[in-house]
Length: 431
Image 1 (tube, rainbow, N blue to C red):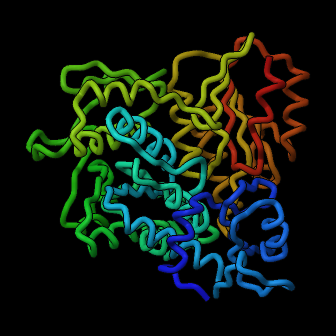
Image 2 (image 1 turned 135 degrees about the vertical axis):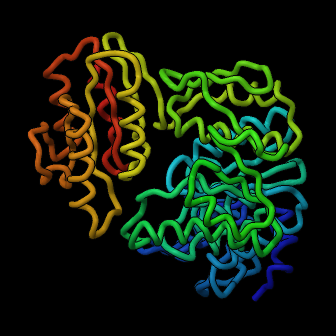
């Protein structure tokens, strides 16, 4: 069996990694990963026949040859190779963890830094124990900074991801009620996100901390090197700290930074927090105000996240990439604060809440009732058993049929739910 040091020169010669024979590149390295419902070892021969240079396996093949590299565990080998590769490249790695806003923050930070640096950022949702090493293995000598999103759904996972990515600095966006099924409680969420702070403490790294969040301030106290950013605060903050107040949050964010007026496609105070994080990081890496302005203003949300869609007769606020109780409340508050009338909300079930599922869905319904929201449509099995007079559908396709029947005009639609609800399928029926 080859060591990581022996495997590394092979990777440098064949730097494209594949884990799926349906998306194979010629001369790639095929890593035969295993999962609950698949075993990549069964496709190793097919990968070689399709043009892979080598197949990294942890089960002996019927006909072994030099193109098969046998290791103890393919996933662990992938992670160790990624960590070894990252260590060879002496560049800053910025880790982004948190319950909500990770991807928006990642995209904003990347957009700002790309005005001056060659940046690698996490593609899509490649942020878990498989996606993160695949991201790191895309690093090459042309990159000057890496912006790495890390997603966890149980305690100690962020600690493991930190060991792989070896971040030199990082940010926890916030703590919310995400993946409660895995974390067990909001306290579990907080401990998990604070694992980044623990790593930065032990490695003399730098933390960017939202000064308006008391929990983040308390958890980050262990980190010696910190830069605080916040929306409102004392003028006595140090010169390397950042304090800005927005001029406008709805329907889009406007603010002034170093005498420059900056506008954003985003809206809401929670997105202003994400913008402040990007400014703080950009400023730390030496970018001037014009570069920061260009980075903020060029970022336009997409991929089902905080997107505004203009149809012939209606507007749609599509935020359907994922949902948890915390992000639902923030996004709803943001939507109803926007100018306009005839607003209607379609809320899809929130997944991975475990024993909290019924309670949290009812809490969200009560939240809407307390805001006196009349036009709310609930979609999914968990919302179906909540107590309210709101219209309910078990399946998203039933909600789509309802929209087609109603022929709405001059409405603003809000669409949000967990990924499995596919709330974006309601866009087409809206005229």
